[in-house]
Image 1 (tube, rainbow, N blue to C red):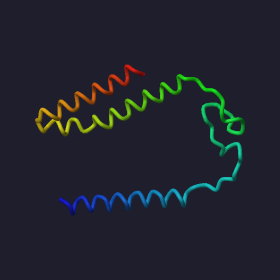
Image 2 (tube, one colour; image 1 turned 180 degrees about the horizontal axis):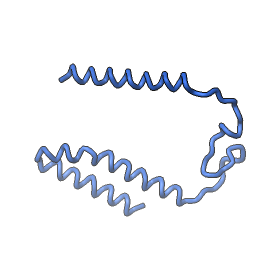
Image 3 (cartoon, rainbow, N blue to C red; image 1 turned 90 degrees about the vertical axis):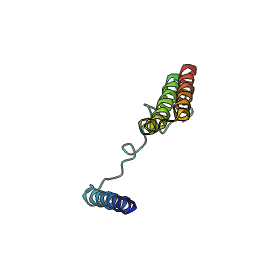
Image 4 (cartoon, helix red, strand yellow; image 1 turned 135 degrees about the vertical axis):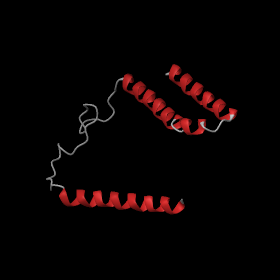
Length: 107
């Protein structure tokens, strides 16, 4: 089993290295244009004052996205763990879901 895992990781490293090398050799040479390669942040001019007020709606949307993102990461192994029937696992996941729900309500 361990031998298969090591072979899999070596295979993944070889594939990613191959893709990286292909992208290095096939990329186009680009000329540096200041306006084209400057960051574009929500319509703000990157060369002006950086302390401009922004809408609170962007902040709330970001927080809600983070809550759902972390919730998905934590709840993703739930089907695997649910095969092991322990009452403590289901109780822990119900507590975690409740905490996320309360955070969502708070936001």
